[in-house]
Amino acid sequence: MLLNNSLIFTMNNAVAGFSKLTKEEKINWIANEYFASPTEAIATIKQYWNNDTKLQQLHDEFVENTISNFYLPMGIAPNFLINGKYYSVPMVIEESSVVAAAAKSAKFWSTRGGFKTTVLNTEKIGQVHFLFNGDSNKLQKFFNTIKEDLIASTESITANMQKRGGGITSLELRNKTTELENYFQLHVTFETKDSMGANFINSCLEQLAKTLKEAAQSHSDFNETEKNLTVVMSILSNYVPNCIVRAEVSCSVEELAEKKIENPQLFAEKLMQAVRIAEIEPFRAVTHNKGIMNGVDAVVLATGNDFRAVEAGVHAYASRNGRYTSLSHAKIENGIFTFWIEIPLALGTVGGLTSLHPLVKIALEILGKPSAHELMMIVAVTGLAQNFAALRSLTTTGIQEGHMKMHINNILNQFQTTSEERKVIKSYFEKNSISHSAVVSFIENLRK
Image (cartoon, rainbow, N blue to C red; front, side, top):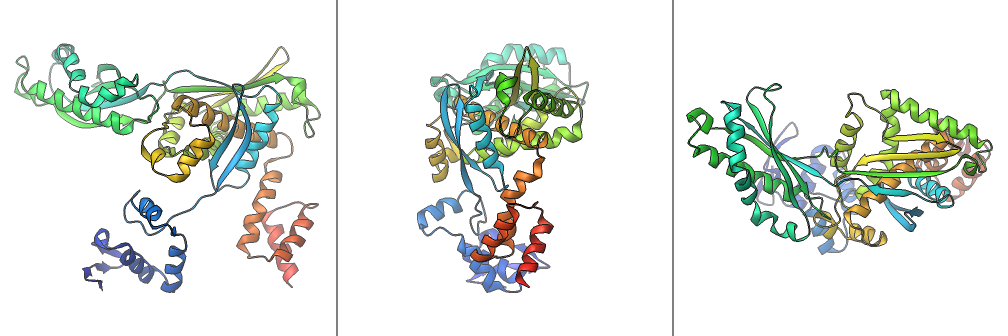
C-alpha cells in the first residue's frame, strides 16, 4: 500500500513503517484497515482534534503515533477544609458519582473541624542493580573507599537541586546474594523538593553506575573477574514507603448525626467494622482501596502527575507486611470517632506536564499553586473523603442508590434519548428504584 509516497507494508493487520507516516496517513491506514466505514471513523477521530493548531501540536508531541485526543471529564469538588484552609479540588475521572461523593464528604467534614494532614517524610528511592562475582567483603571495602567519589560524580546533575534543598540524601551498598546469585545494589535516597524527580533520579543513578564500573575496572585489589562487575540496570523505584502523608478527620460520635445517620453510635460502629473487615480480608481490601484511589488518581491526573506510579507504590505499601490490607483505619475512643489514612505519594508541582498541559496549569492555579508537600496533603485528603463517602453509603443506604442516580445519564446517552424522553424517565426514577435493566426496560416501553 502506498500513501503519499510513504511505503507501508501490511499483512493481517501487522504493519511496518507506521511511525514514519504522517498523522493523516496513520489515520487513513487505521480507518481503512479496521473499519467498515472508514469515512465515519476518520470523522470521529478528527472530531476530537483541537481547533488551536499550536495546542493540538502540543498534545500530539506528548506521546508517539498520535491520531487524536482522548478526553476525560474534569470536575471540581469544593469545600475541602484542610488544616484550616479551604480548597476546591480538580478531579479528572470518568466514573459516575466520584466527584459528587468527594464533594459531599468535603462538605460533611467542613462543619466538623475539617481534615488534618501531616507530611511524615518525603524520601524517594533509586537503585543501581549490578552483579559482582567475587569476595563481598572486598566489594564492601571498595565501596567505602569510593563512596564520596560516587556522590561527587553526580554534582553537575545535583547542583540545581541542591540549591533548592534537595539532592542525594544517602547511599549504601546492599548485598542481595542470598536471594539472587552475585546480586548487589547501590541503594540511593533522594529529596526532590517540588519536583516528582524521576528524570533527575534516573540521571543520577546512571552516573553512579558509570562511576562504579569505571572505578572497579581500575581497582588494584580486584582480580580480573571482580573488575568486570556487570551493571544490569539503573532505575528509580515507585515504591516509596518513606514518602508518606497522613490525613485524618475526627469528631464526637454525636456530631456524626445527619439526615441519613439517625443513630450516630451505630453508624460509627458499623463504619469501624467495615474498615476492620478491609484490614483483614484481602478480597474486600482491594475494592476498599480502589475506592480510595478513585479520589487519589483523579487529583493526580488533574495535576499532571503519574497515576500509574502512584498506584503501584500505594498497592505495594498496602502489602508491606506480607498481606494486602486497608489503607484507611478508624477508631472510637472516649466518645471520639477518628478516621485516617497514611499513604505513600511521590508527587511534583514543577516539571513534566505541570508546565506543559494547559489544564494542568489551571488545576494547579485552582489549588493555589501548591508545593509538592501541599499537593500530597490534598491528594491524601481526597482519597480519605472518597473512602468515607463509600463507607457511609455501604453502611447506610447501600452503594447503588447514589451511584445509579449519577449513572442514569450514561444510560440515557447510550440510548440517545431526547430531552422530552429524559424528563419523563428522570421523573419516574425519582420515586422508583434505579437499575440498568429497569431504565432500559422503561425506555423500551416508552418508545412503544
